[in-house]
Length: 453
Ligand SMILES: Nc1ncnc2c1ncn2[C@@H]1O[C@H](COP(=O)(O)OP(=O)(O)O)[C@@H](O)[C@H]1O
Ligand SMILES: O=P(O)(O)O[C@H]1O[C@H](CO)[C@@H](O[C@H]2O[C@H](CO)[C@@H](O)[C@H](O)[C@H]2O)[C@H](O)[C@H]1O
Image (tube, rainbow, N blue to C red; front, top):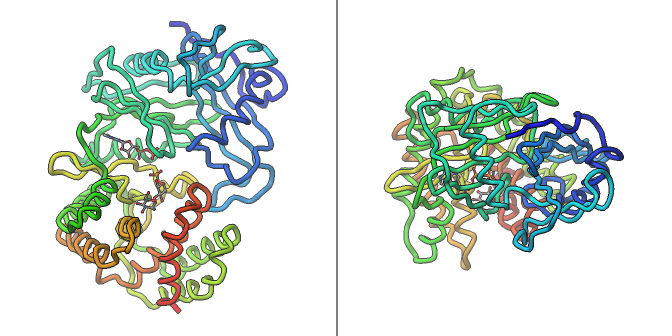
């Protein structure tokens, strides 16, 4: 297999392959679920690296710029880097269907058909072949756990889930997640799942193979893990319990225990630190709130009440030690296979900078994320079921306390502040990605602002 770097890193918007791709990608990128800049126009596209992964398949890192508009959630204002796998073919095939991006009109690829290679089974198969054989392709490095052999010829299918990234399932045996928004550094999804596996924690599918780039900087690009067959995610299970009028407390309790198990293993694998001062944390939460209110005007009337709620943190007991955490824990991030819960997607909140996501935080943040998720689920049906959510929350905290050695319910002020902070994040997330869902976190904001005042 030939691997040739066919473009040097750099801004090549008006020369080289980017001259062919720029127009097509400006149209296509904002329509992708994983594209984070939907609320801002793409003002420029720059090529950061391009590698021919195998004949007819280009691996690209492109930077989508959004001029100087400040970005909510702490992301750098200038734009984001995305990973793309593009197929380039002389003759369009009618079978490309939804994979088709378009026909390049100018530049060196003029006249060629460009498509999303992840949606093309042949390209997806070749990508697995690449992962099965550790080595380099230009700046790309393919690595893996030699103790876990990956068989050849597994049939790929692209997951059609609402995702921040893209995942390919191979023969129902492995799942490959390709990170879409790339930041310099090790992705915590690989870092934490690898460390948890090293601790013997059974709650996480261990990484089997992965790939990274060395240019324009070091970054994780994808992770292959065992695929949990016949698993259902917590969100689907919770909604189906609600639909049939069932309780979810036994599951929530086990989930609380599983969360504590993961937290304990993370605390063993990485250094912890005494919990940061509550007043500093309150200031950071208030800053995030004010930034969010700038972008979502519906938040503005609640700012004074929520500021008071955060301010009250100063008088609360210090929380448990800060440590590495999941960072974006919700019902969609837990899978139930057989009688066990598994935790996936340790990337953290995708809009936060990687350095922050790789820092230590209070475990209360994960607990708050899951508690908010019970509320989300309970609000999917009318009349909404606050009592159902309350019982789940109670059971989840009890399950957590049964293993962790401390009870989240006894950290009431801290828990409420983290829940509020999470609801603020959700308001921003929904405003950007699913405006129809905005009333769900807004209802929590209204409740928390009134109680906090
Ligand atoms: N190991 C796994 N086994 C089975 N399904 C998985 C596994 N990992 C992920 N999935 C499925 O893929 C979906 C997306 O995975 P996730 O890691 O959450 O991606 P993203 O970061 O893009 O949201 C999950 O909701 C789940 O349904
Ligand atoms: O894509 P990710 O799973 O990394 O997480 C992002 O998307 C989630 C939605 O898909 C979003 O979660 C919010 O909606 C869920 C219901 O769809 C709910 O269970 C969560 O509690 C709620 O936060 C998540 O915030 C976002 O980071």
